Length: 621
Image (tube, rainbow, N blue to C red; front, side):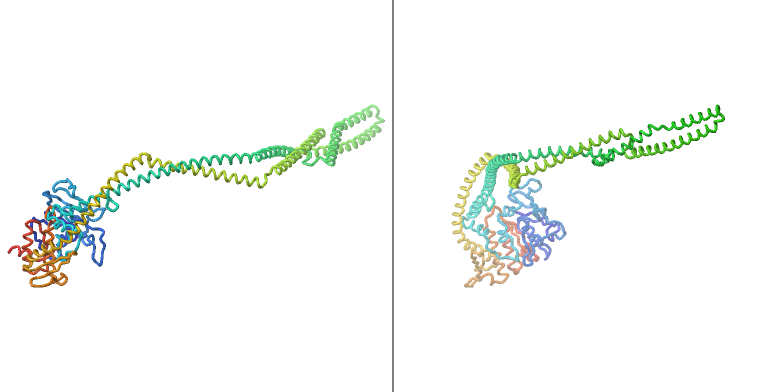
């Protein structure tokens, strides 16, 4: 793979561009100019940004450390050549997080490179995972040591097992692992998906069966509830039959009593307004009325007998008689006049007496009219008789109403249910209410279950699908078991080969160290955890890298890293990225290192970031 151009909005890089060439690229720049940022950017573009990092011991995670200084979101693009095709890889920030929006297209087109994805682009392009890239081709002067890594060991074993990069135990193991992981990897893969689908279908089928069984139980419960409710309602009706009959009888008596009382009240009001004035027609009351009526009759008779004009006519006749006597018997005129005076006096006395009697009679009639509304004795007598009749009717109605009231009380007392009957009736009512409530709740539960069944689907279809999935799962489990057995056998063989990778790598690293230092007898020994021990010319024992100077230690680990890069299998040589990797080298060994890098750049791209000019001068020698 060859990197052509990088465009970065990343940390201190403000939409900066860096163009590269095949072979050796030496980028010379002062400190704090963004060299390490370019390295981190390239790593991020290939492998993505680990957003799960948290700050530890004052070391900030990359998402914070390389946040753009211009305040915008992280983004960038890398133009490269891979497998003879020009490709542009882009990453940007979005809702998923910084640098999580990924695209890979053939340069100059919008056609997507299907093989490359956000998670595995770097591994596919470089032929190695990030952990191996960090321990081999990504060389930082701040951390030159090579640490043990399972992925790195697999790469080394591929070479040691067959000597061919295209066919190795690690590749076979990885292929088997991919197939196995495709079938089952933790909770992912075809088998877990099938198992989850089976479990979901089985749960649905079981839910349908349980719901159907529940429907049957609810139907049985509802039928039993209806039978029990009907029996209790019949029992209550029988219990209430006498009660209802008694209630009807009491209602009829109450109605009759009300009618009698209303009629009695009407008569009572007429009596209150009548001639008796509401008094009971006792003998004293009747005697009093008879006496008043007799007085009225006498007064009426007197007024009828003594007409007011009688005495006037009598006086006129007497006067006429006196005048005649005076005309014929003048000598007797004195006697006639005296007689006239005597007659007139008598008539006057009689007239005055009759007037008084008449006045008294009129007063009696007036009092009768004022008291009873009429002065006609005959009419008043008729009214008295009517009042006596009404009084008797009122007494009869009152007696009847009282009799009906007594019958009601007697009937109510006689038909009053016993406490035991009332308690039984209340118990029946409570049981009926409970039964009705249970039937209602049963129907509601049945409706809910039926809705669940309708939602879950047809159990026959689900069972058929479940049977098909079970057959498919059994076939995949057989395949997975075969892959597991093959992986175990391959692991045994791989373990045997791992015991032999250190000597081969040690020889390759020793040769590289001799080229870097010019020491013909220098040797490197590596143990299984990739710790280097160096023995220089003339020394009898090897020294652990921890006891070496910084420069010597960096030279040893650079030799190991370059040897690993040369040994690791890959379809295309992986670019080497060096960030101030020669910082601790003296000038002579810088020159030797540049010779080695120049030679390696004939087959792979090398990108060297440095803050010195001696690397570029060494190339010009």
